[in-house]
Amino acid sequence: MKIQLFITCLNDALFPRTGVATTEILERLGHTVEFDPRQTCCGQMHLNSGYTDEALKLAESWLDVFEGAECIVSPSGSCVANVREMFAHMGEWTQTPGLVERAQAMDGKLFELSEFLLKFGGVEELQPYFPHRVTYHPTCHGARALGLSDSPEKLLRLVEGLEFIELDQKWQCCGFGGTFSVKNADTSTAMLEDKCATIWDSEAEYCVAIDNSCLMHIGGGLKKQGKAPKVIHLAEVLASRRPE
Image (tube, rainbow, N blue to C red):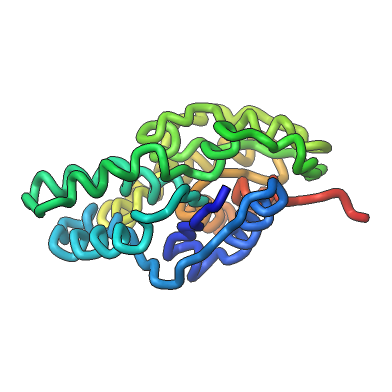
Protein backbone atom coordinates (compact mmCIF):
# COMPACT_ATOMS: atom_id res chain seq x y z
CA MET A 1 0.00 0.00 0.00
CA LYS A 2 1.19 3.54 -0.73
CA ILE A 3 1.01 5.58 2.48
CA GLN A 4 1.37 9.31 3.00
CA LEU A 5 2.98 10.04 6.37
CA PHE A 6 1.27 12.80 8.35
CA ILE A 7 4.01 13.41 10.86
CA THR A 8 2.46 16.44 12.66
CA CYS A 9 4.33 19.62 13.56
CA LEU A 10 5.05 18.57 17.17
CA ASN A 11 6.71 15.32 16.14
CA ASP A 12 8.63 17.02 13.35
CA ALA A 13 10.00 19.71 15.64
CA LEU A 14 10.52 17.86 18.93
CA PHE A 15 10.20 14.08 18.50
CA PRO A 16 11.80 13.09 15.18
CA ARG A 17 12.54 9.55 16.38
CA THR A 18 8.81 8.84 16.38
CA GLY A 19 8.57 9.68 12.70
CA VAL A 20 11.58 7.50 11.92
CA ALA A 21 10.08 4.61 13.91
CA THR A 22 6.72 4.97 12.18
CA THR A 23 8.37 4.87 8.78
CA GLU A 24 10.45 1.82 9.75
CA ILE A 25 7.36 -0.05 10.91
CA LEU A 26 5.36 0.64 7.76
CA GLU A 27 8.23 -0.13 5.41
CA ARG A 28 9.06 -3.39 7.22
CA LEU A 29 5.46 -4.41 6.63
CA GLY A 30 5.93 -3.87 2.90
CA HIS A 31 4.23 -0.50 2.50
CA THR A 32 5.60 2.40 0.47
CA VAL A 33 5.90 5.49 2.66
CA GLU A 34 5.92 8.97 1.18
CA PHE A 35 6.36 12.30 2.94
CA ASP A 36 5.10 15.51 1.41
CA PRO A 37 7.22 18.40 2.77
CA ARG A 38 4.43 20.88 2.08
CA GLN A 39 2.51 19.64 5.12
CA THR A 40 2.26 21.98 8.10
CA CYS A 41 0.12 22.18 11.22
CA CYS A 42 -3.43 20.80 11.05
CA GLY A 43 -4.65 23.81 13.05
CA GLN A 44 -5.74 21.95 16.16
CA MET A 45 -4.32 24.39 18.70
CA HIS A 46 -5.51 27.40 16.70
CA LEU A 47 -9.06 26.02 16.66
CA ASN A 48 -8.95 25.09 20.35
CA SER A 49 -7.86 28.65 21.15
CA GLY A 50 -10.65 30.27 19.15
CA TYR A 51 -8.59 31.34 16.13
CA THR A 52 -11.06 29.95 13.62
CA ASP A 53 -9.84 31.97 10.62
CA GLU A 54 -6.27 30.77 11.10
CA ALA A 55 -7.42 27.18 11.73
CA LEU A 56 -9.53 27.30 8.58
CA LYS A 57 -6.55 28.27 6.45
CA LEU A 58 -4.49 25.45 7.91
CA ALA A 59 -7.32 22.94 7.36
CA GLU A 60 -7.60 23.91 3.71
CA SER A 61 -3.82 23.70 3.33
CA TRP A 62 -3.80 20.25 4.93
CA LEU A 63 -6.45 19.03 2.52
CA ASP A 64 -4.54 20.47 -0.43
CA VAL A 65 -1.60 18.27 0.56
CA PHE A 66 -3.36 15.04 1.50
CA GLU A 67 -6.69 14.71 -0.28
CA GLY A 68 -5.20 12.81 -3.22
CA ALA A 69 -3.57 10.17 -1.00
CA GLU A 70 -4.56 6.52 -1.06
CA CYS A 71 -3.93 6.15 2.67
CA ILE A 72 -2.65 8.51 5.39
CA VAL A 73 -1.05 7.36 8.65
CA SER A 74 -0.05 9.51 11.62
CA PRO A 75 1.57 8.77 15.01
CA SER A 76 -0.74 11.26 16.69
CA GLY A 77 -4.25 10.50 17.89
CA SER A 78 -5.06 14.11 18.68
CA CYS A 79 -4.18 15.41 15.22
CA VAL A 80 -6.02 12.56 13.49
CA ALA A 81 -9.05 13.35 15.65
CA ASN A 82 -8.85 17.03 14.72
CA VAL A 83 -8.87 16.28 11.00
CA ARG A 84 -11.49 13.56 11.25
CA GLU A 85 -13.92 15.38 13.54
CA MET A 86 -13.31 19.09 13.36
CA PHE A 87 -12.61 19.92 9.70
CA ALA A 88 -16.18 19.17 8.62
CA HIS A 89 -17.61 20.99 11.64
CA MET A 90 -15.46 24.00 10.82
CA GLY A 91 -16.78 23.94 7.27
CA GLU A 92 -20.33 24.08 8.64
CA TRP A 93 -19.57 26.88 11.11
CA THR A 94 -17.84 29.07 8.59
CA GLN A 95 -19.98 28.02 5.61
CA THR A 96 -16.80 27.54 3.61
CA PRO A 97 -17.70 26.19 0.15
CA GLY A 98 -16.63 22.59 -0.34
CA LEU A 99 -14.84 22.13 2.99
CA VAL A 100 -17.41 19.73 4.45
CA GLU A 101 -17.29 17.52 1.37
CA ARG A 102 -13.48 17.62 1.19
CA ALA A 103 -13.20 16.69 4.86
CA GLN A 104 -15.73 13.87 4.60
CA ALA A 105 -13.79 12.45 1.65
CA MET A 106 -11.01 11.64 4.13
CA ASP A 107 -13.22 9.03 5.84
CA GLY A 108 -11.58 5.64 5.63
CA LYS A 109 -8.27 7.07 4.41
CA LEU A 110 -6.78 8.63 7.55
CA PHE A 111 -5.54 6.44 10.42
CA GLU A 112 -3.69 6.82 13.68
CA LEU A 113 -0.76 4.36 13.61
CA SER A 114 -2.09 1.77 16.08
CA GLU A 115 -5.51 1.98 14.42
CA PHE A 116 -3.91 1.23 11.05
CA LEU A 117 -1.87 -1.70 12.40
CA LEU A 118 -4.88 -3.33 14.02
CA LYS A 119 -7.00 -2.90 10.91
CA PHE A 120 -4.47 -4.18 8.39
CA GLY A 121 -2.39 -6.46 10.64
CA GLY A 122 1.20 -7.56 10.44
CA VAL A 123 2.51 -6.63 13.89
CA GLU A 124 3.59 -10.23 14.52
CA GLU A 125 5.75 -9.99 11.39
CA LEU A 126 7.63 -7.05 12.90
CA GLN A 127 8.81 -9.24 15.78
CA PRO A 128 9.27 -6.24 18.10
CA TYR A 129 11.50 -6.79 21.12
CA PHE A 130 11.41 -4.48 24.14
CA PRO A 131 12.54 -6.19 27.38
CA HIS A 132 11.13 -3.71 29.88
CA ARG A 133 8.29 -3.21 32.34
CA VAL A 134 5.78 -1.00 30.53
CA THR A 135 2.53 0.73 31.36
CA TYR A 136 0.19 2.53 28.99
CA HIS A 137 -1.58 5.89 29.25
CA PRO A 138 -4.69 6.08 27.02
CA THR A 139 -4.73 9.64 25.71
CA CYS A 140 -8.08 11.43 25.70
CA HIS A 141 -8.25 11.97 21.94
CA GLY A 142 -7.29 8.37 21.25
CA ALA A 143 -9.70 6.85 23.74
CA ARG A 144 -12.63 9.23 23.45
CA ALA A 145 -12.47 10.90 20.05
CA LEU A 146 -11.10 7.96 18.04
CA GLY A 147 -12.66 5.24 20.18
CA LEU A 148 -9.42 3.24 20.40
CA SER A 149 -10.14 2.15 23.98
CA ASP A 150 -7.47 -0.42 24.89
CA SER A 151 -6.46 -1.18 21.28
CA PRO A 152 -2.85 0.04 21.65
CA GLU A 153 -2.53 -2.20 24.71
CA LYS A 154 -3.24 -5.19 22.47
CA LEU A 155 -0.23 -4.24 20.35
CA LEU A 156 2.00 -3.87 23.40
CA ARG A 157 1.03 -7.33 24.61
CA LEU A 158 2.41 -8.75 21.35
CA VAL A 159 5.90 -7.36 21.99
CA GLU A 160 8.48 -9.97 22.94
CA GLY A 161 10.16 -9.41 26.30
CA LEU A 162 7.71 -6.69 27.35
CA GLU A 163 6.06 -7.00 30.75
CA PHE A 164 2.77 -5.11 30.58
CA ILE A 165 1.47 -3.41 33.71
CA GLU A 166 -2.09 -2.10 33.84
CA LEU A 167 -2.11 1.55 34.90
CA ASP A 168 -4.38 2.37 37.83
CA GLN A 169 -7.09 4.92 36.96
CA LYS A 170 -5.76 4.87 33.42
CA TRP A 171 -8.70 6.73 31.90
CA GLN A 172 -7.94 9.90 33.84
CA CYS A 173 -6.62 12.77 31.72
CA CYS A 174 -2.99 13.75 32.24
CA GLY A 175 -3.95 17.44 32.24
CA PHE A 176 -2.21 18.50 29.04
CA GLY A 177 -5.10 19.25 26.69
CA GLY A 178 -3.02 21.52 24.47
CA THR A 179 -3.74 25.09 25.50
CA PHE A 180 -5.64 23.85 28.57
CA SER A 181 -2.32 23.33 30.35
CA VAL A 182 -1.43 26.96 29.63
CA LYS A 183 -4.76 28.61 30.37
CA ASN A 184 -5.54 26.45 33.42
CA ALA A 185 -2.06 25.77 34.76
CA ASP A 186 -3.04 25.03 38.36
CA THR A 187 -5.72 22.51 37.42
CA SER A 188 -3.47 20.97 34.78
CA THR A 189 -0.62 20.60 37.28
CA ALA A 190 -2.88 18.88 39.81
CA MET A 191 -4.07 16.42 37.16
CA LEU A 192 -0.49 15.80 36.08
CA GLU A 193 0.61 15.05 39.63
CA ASP A 194 -2.14 12.44 39.97
CA LYS A 195 -1.15 10.82 36.68
CA CYS A 196 2.55 10.78 37.55
CA ALA A 197 1.76 9.22 40.92
CA THR A 198 -0.08 6.30 39.32
CA ILE A 199 2.76 5.78 36.83
CA TRP A 200 5.31 5.78 39.63
CA ASP A 201 3.19 3.37 41.69
CA SER A 202 3.03 0.96 38.75
CA GLU A 203 6.81 0.42 39.08
CA ALA A 204 7.05 0.48 35.28
CA GLU A 205 10.27 1.48 33.56
CA TYR A 206 8.41 3.16 30.70
CA CYS A 207 5.07 4.87 30.14
CA VAL A 208 3.80 4.49 26.58
CA ALA A 209 1.19 6.54 24.73
CA ILE A 210 0.17 7.32 21.14
CA ASP A 211 0.54 11.09 21.52
CA ASN A 212 3.87 12.76 22.16
CA SER A 213 2.07 15.87 23.37
CA CYS A 214 0.78 13.98 26.41
CA LEU A 215 4.10 12.17 26.82
CA MET A 216 5.91 15.52 26.81
CA HIS A 217 3.63 16.70 29.61
CA ILE A 218 3.94 13.50 31.63
CA GLY A 219 7.67 13.23 31.03
CA GLY A 220 8.16 16.75 32.31
CA GLY A 221 6.19 15.96 35.43
CA LEU A 222 8.13 12.78 36.15
CA LYS A 223 11.46 14.51 35.57
CA LYS A 224 10.49 17.41 37.81
CA GLN A 225 9.72 14.94 40.60
CA GLY A 226 13.04 13.21 39.98
CA LYS A 227 11.35 9.86 39.44
CA ALA A 228 12.53 6.97 37.34
CA PRO A 229 9.89 6.03 34.72
CA LYS A 230 10.66 7.25 31.20
CA VAL A 231 8.16 8.06 28.46
CA ILE A 232 8.21 6.61 24.97
CA HIS A 233 5.89 6.63 21.96
CA LEU A 234 4.22 3.38 20.94
CA ALA A 235 5.88 3.56 17.51
CA GLU A 236 9.35 3.45 19.07
CA VAL A 237 8.44 0.35 21.08
CA LEU A 238 7.01 -1.46 18.07
CA ALA A 239 10.04 -0.55 15.96
CA SER A 240 12.48 -1.95 18.54
CA ARG A 241 14.21 -5.19 17.59
CA ARG A 242 16.32 -7.82 19.29
CA PRO A 243 20.03 -6.93 19.01
CA GLU A 244 21.79 -8.96 16.33
